[in-house]
Length: 280
Ligand code: SAH
Image (tube, rainbow, N blue to C red):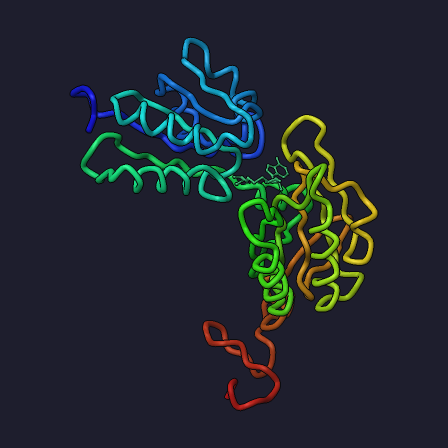
């Protein structure tokens, strides 16, 4: 039950990869509207200039449950609260935890707080933009953090994604103490990809000390990979061009560069393969 008549607002805000240029206007106005801003120290730092006059609750990385509960409770009691995540709050971010807290306390949609989830540019997208166009065909995101997920589950997903030829974005690839997972991931991926398949390592996209490297499946472990890195592993179709990493959409399967339709193909019809009953 709300403790006063005012219905609070809980904004769950993704601020994008870095400072405000890559936050959406909606994210910025949610923060502007909030009386209380809650978030992990680094993300609060990224939007510091927007916070004058506001109450701020900033905590360390391992205090997520406390942060989500504090945000929910204050908003439930009538405050306008912005809970800030980097990237998109719904991608390895605080949005899921907010719902778990709300479920735990038996919140219903017509009660305080009014919930507003504001999307942000997730690391997979911001990092892709730094190295070309690696996500133009099917891709997936896998977090290598086994702090909350058992490693065998993560390994099974890497295996499935590699076998199915997805471009793979690896979040949380390593930290100071956690270095084993990225090496195991490389071994699994190598079973399904040539060693020369492009891999991008993008660190701190759109932040200070940003750094990107394009390398390949056989060599990416030779470079520093840490908590601020996202690893993008190409599919079997991904290619390098002028230092960019590109995954083609598939136009060349159907058209010439003059716009002619290739023999045996029809625009707006399923791609025909050279032979095989499934394509007849
Ligand atoms: N909610 C965030 C992800 C949080 S998980 C989002 O949607 O982007 C934290 C991981 O995200 C990091 O370990 C790193 O892999 C990735 N990441 C977040 N911000 C990044 C940035 N600016 N540059 C590169 N990787 C980033």
